[in-house]
Length: 66
Image (tube, rainbow, N blue to C red; front, top):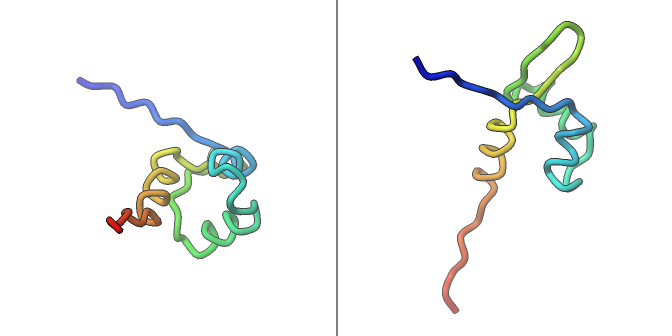
């Protein structure tokens, strides 16, 4: 059986992971509107790194030849 390890980030760490391109309040809005996956551990809201990576991929715009 394969073990699966997930890296979870708190909101401030998610902002840093996204290089500060969004604010903590933006991420909280995504969470409130259920636009990004979360994991709740006790009273702490965490975001899987995989969810942030998918967010980056959705925003990717391919380069075009000039």
